[in-house]
Image (tube, rainbow, N blue to C red):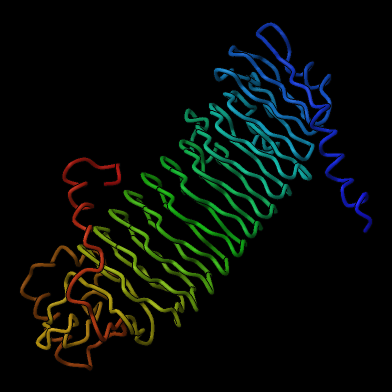
Length: 425
C-alpha cells in the first residue's frame, strides 16, 4: 500500500471529527428535532428537564444528558430505539415505556445492526424491558440503574437487560431490581458480565446457549434464584456473591468445560445446584449457611471439585445416583461436620468424608422424617448405616478432607446474618 493511501483512513477520521458539531436542547424544545438536524458524529446535549417523546436514532450520534434530564415515553412503545451503529447514550433518565411483552417494549431498544452502541450512566424507571439488545455486537452497557414495572406481577414484567444473539458485549456495573430476570442472555458469546448488582428479581441472571463468557464480581441477592447458567460451555464464573435467594445461589445446568472459582453462596435455599454438568472445575468456593449446600443430580460426573469450604449448611450435599463421586483429589474440601481427626498433623483428615448416608437419602425423599432428627431411632439408623456397608448408599466421597477452612473470612458471613440480612459483609 502506498503511504498516501495508508494515511487515508486517518485523514478521513480527522475530517469527520473537525466537522462534528454539538447541538443543545433545552426544555420546550424537541430532542427528535435535534436528531433530525444532526449529522453523523454530532453530539446532542440535553439540558435538565422533562421531555415527553419517543426517539428513533438512525445515525451515529451521542445523546448526553446535562444534570440528568428525564425522557418519558408516556407508556407508548420504546422510549429510545437505536437503528444505527455507533450510538452513545449517557446521563439520561429513561422512563415510562409501553408494557406490551409481545412487542418487547423497552427503555432502550438496540435493534439488529446497532453495533458498537454505548449506554452509560443512565437511570431506567417504570420500563418493561430496561434494554433489549438484539443482534448488536460489541455493545457496552455500563453503570446504569434499572428498575422495572414493580407494580406488576413478576411474570408480567420484562427483563432488566435482554441480550440476544449479540457477540462481545460488556455488561458492567449495572444495578437492576424489580424486573422479571435481571440479565437474560441467549445465544450471545465472548461477553463479559462484571460488577453487576441484581436483586428482587425472579433470577438474577437467566443465561443459556452462550459460550466463552466471563461472570465476575457480581452480587445476586434476595431473588427467587441467583445466577442460573444453563446449556453453556467454556464459562468463567469467578468471585461472585449470591445470598438470601429463595432457591439457588448458583445453578449450573447442562454445562461443560467451565471454571467456577472463588464464589460465595450464603443463606440460599440451595447454595449450588449442579445438574447434568461434566468436565468442569469447581474450586475455592465458599458454600455457607444454606438449607442445602450442594444439590448434585442428573449424571454430574467427571468434575474437579477441590479446595471448597462447606460450612454450616442444613444438609451439606443432596445427591441421588447409583455410584460414588470422588471430590477433593488435591487440596481437599473443608466440611464443617467432618468428625475425623488429623493424627499426622498434615492438615488433612485421616479418614475419608462421606457426604450422606441412608438416613440423609431417606430425609431427602421424605422431608417429614426430619421431624425425627433427634430421635434415638434415627440416630441408631444413622450409626448402623455407617457401620454396615450393606446399608450404604452412593455419595460424595472426599478422601482427603481439609481440617481448616480455606476462607479465613468465612465468619463474616455468619456475623452478617446476626447483624443484618440482605447486605454482603
